[in-house]
Amino acid sequence: MRRQLTPYPDAALCAALAADLDAADLRSEPLRGAWGDDADDAFGRGIRGPLLRAIEGRTDALATLGRFFVVGLPQPADAVEAALPTVGLAGLEALGLAYREDDVAVPAALVRPQSFVDADGVGEWWIASDLDEVALGGALPPDHVLGVGGASRTLAELVMPVPVARALDLGTGCGIQALLVARHATNVVATDISARALAYAEINAMIAGVTTIDFRQGSMFEPVAGEAFGLIVSNPPFVITPRAEGVPEYEYRDGGLVGDALVEKFVREAPAFLIPGGAAQLLGNWEARAGVAGMERLRSWVPDGIDAWVIERESLSPIGYAELWIRDGGTTPREPEFEPLLEAWIDDFAGRAVDEIGFGYVLLRRPKDPAAPPLRRFESLTQGVSGVGRALRDGLRGHDALNAGMPERLVVASDVTEARHHLPGAENPSVIELRQGGGFARTLSVDSALAAFVGACDGELTVAQIVGALADLFEVPLPELWADLEPRIRALVVDGFLAAE
Image: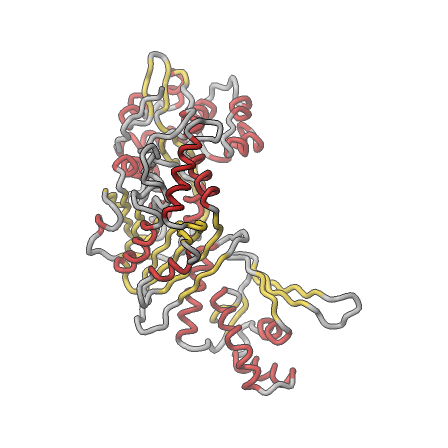
């Protein structure tokens, strides 16, 4: 049975560890090169055999630390000492990341390279977190601190690349969002209810050499009472968990409230902590209850005068949702604990008449002009996306531009293409589509008039000049054509197909 140590941040030891990891080149690409693409992909699915087979017998620092810190396997103590000559095994033990048992070094944490891409470029950090279920060989402890997972990467993709003076990462966990936000925020406050999570987050900031993050312990907005921020990001513990005996309460995913009350609390309270023009972004779940759609319930939580853009990515049945999160905790249907947990989830959902559970993204913004009509956009999008943070930023800018009136000139976004489909032998297309290559990858069917308008938006002619020319071309009265085009042009601006010059 692995011992669980308490992580302890120490700037000098973290700097020494970073120097050793750098010297060993413990990074994503060298590791993938060491054990191969297929083994790396299998490891991402929780299968470690091919990876270990590929580096079997290797005693170099990269292979030793790959087994020790990436996979989480004990290694000979002298091999770990050789791979980490600066920090040493004693330094790891002082940090709470490993310990010695006779001649064996035992990892008490994972330290994995995590690459990222944002508006400022490409980079990579080493991120320390608790041992996962593969390394532990069983269910996770309730105070488990998660590393960088799918939800973390999703939120990182969502965050708008906008420079701010002060940012808040609420529920920081291992600290990955705080590190990312620190790249375009002067100062960041990172909070968590878990002292263990905050210790890991501080260790990770020290390893990365980032000194602009203030770590504070507390629930929700309590640690920042009376403060305001230009950006709030949160991957909160939103997982809906039964409040029943025998159901584990994992700190990293369970906020301790009933149903989707934690997401409701965030949506209602976050705007009070935003400066004018400031935005809050989070991931969350919401329940559809007794025939009332989850998105409609969420809409009712948004305070008056606040911009809201909510995107539902998927929805699950109560049974599907329960199975997902029971497995996430390391319990499979083959184990006797699975059925009682499933029953607890089903009973919990039945008590609130829950029909389905939605998952998605929430963007809230306090407008700079409180008199401006707020954006209220609630939609379901399931297609693959890329560069979502920029798309959200540009959509808000488009909304603001339209609040001031139709821009004088519009230009087509650089990722927009047009596709025309003809029936055999037909002179005119039966379908015209505008397609986005990035953002939300929307595809819109348009008619000839709107396609011609978009095609002419190169910044040379004004909107009025283009519409006037099209009215002559199609022999349609100008007021009639404008009444048809104007709302659709506005939608193209908010969707990012067109932008104010």
